[in-house]
Image (cartoon, rainbow, N blue to C red):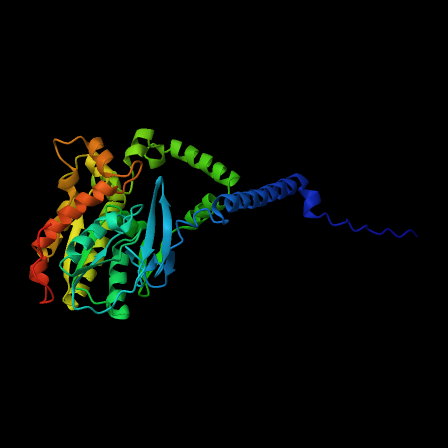
Length: 393
């Protein structure tokens, strides 16, 4: 009698089952590794480091309390911003300043603290030529101290938390806070920052973080990503990446600034953003009241508001009423840049960095002059006996 045995089939591994797919994945992986390595070598040759944006971030660091800040006592002889280049110094508190130096926490002089985002930091401009630096110089003649706590990409959640930290943890003494509330703060409060367990956290998605990595450390993958984004934006006629060269030159048609004139964007994030900003500004106001500190609130247009002749803007109406109800000094800078007789593009060319939404040196100068005029009527009533009369500039 014959005995039949069943042969055990040999196990087929995945490569044998899907050879083409696995080979393709291996090739893609090797290509990405090569892209990263070669791009890194190129960056080392050009920038002296693998990090493409290392110079831009040299004096910046994360904060466990209010998300990010500037490094203390930092010095960068040449910081580049587009085609601009200027020296960048920070003092012992990590504030942009005219030089590296120690700031005394207590003072017998009247002291003003500024808070805001990149406009207040004065991105791309040397401290002495920013509006804060100009005001600093002018008021120093009367022994009034000025400090700049503003940092790029700040918004009201950070304004509140940083000022709270300075007052109640650091122990900084100051008499008046000037808040420069930015148009982009409304979107940032919806999409970028939140308060969790008493600290500010970022709301950036994993996709955003991946994009930042790709754009900084790769070349080929960055180009592929860019093509994909262009295809996506071509299918979305409202996407800001479809801006024309003229729009890019004048810094206009940007979603984060159009909420004041575009009803769709106002419904999409403007209403929620305004409500959240109101809550954070109220907390900031109450904090200052508790410490008997005065407040000035300033609003100003982006190029989009100038082009749309948005003189009586939502940004103005909302915050002017808010300030009036609380007896807060209010500075409306919209009329400084928007005029029925003025040509919008000429105004942008005169006062803004080309291809950017930020002020150039002339823009900072006129803002400083307007601020000094505004503060003349406020400072004597808030002096708390620390100083004499402020002479007009």
